[in-house]
Length: 271
Image (cartoon, rainbow, N blue to C red; front, side):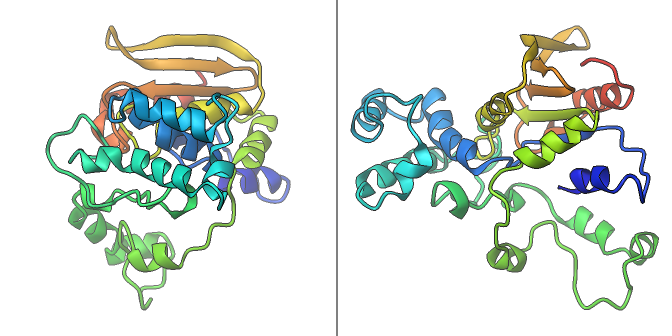
């Protein structure tokens, strides 16, 4: 939304916007809800017969044409709703870090109690907060960012107070991203493929539904002579990539690869 606002106000406030990068973002409620079911299934957390029963009972036998959100919100299909919640929680219940299913260091406490709008996407239980909190509350930094020193609040990497009182204003980022692309600003959506909360399935489906022609079909992208993930390039400056082995915090889990695609983006070079 910020990038779109910059584009809309370039005549009055010219900003040299080089590109837009979104990492494991909540870009669409519908695709995110779909991935909450598909990701656990395709990663072995859901029984085959359970998925088949769900498809037959709740999706008229066809998952591809099934509107997950409509099924979930249908008060006449509470059994389907419960099944979807069970699917979404299957990774958490397996004592796995939902923000990186390949990490065996810890389980996160953020349980996905509901599909769609009600889930909590913040990974604050999975990361060390102290260094970031101290940095963001440093008086010198506040002065540099023109934030009043006498403010009566403390910055935190994840605030329960903000999260509990925040009201969703947008369910879909398509209009904003399309606006940026139409302004000839390249957009990169990158997803750590080990993140089950805001998964690559959601990002991939979101990009496809933008309706742009594929310029480069799904192909590996390479860093340091090794396959680092997969990429799809669309006409008009849209690129979608996955980052193998990385979780929700791609830049922290794969810093060298992140720096590579960030620099390629800034230099207007292909990944």
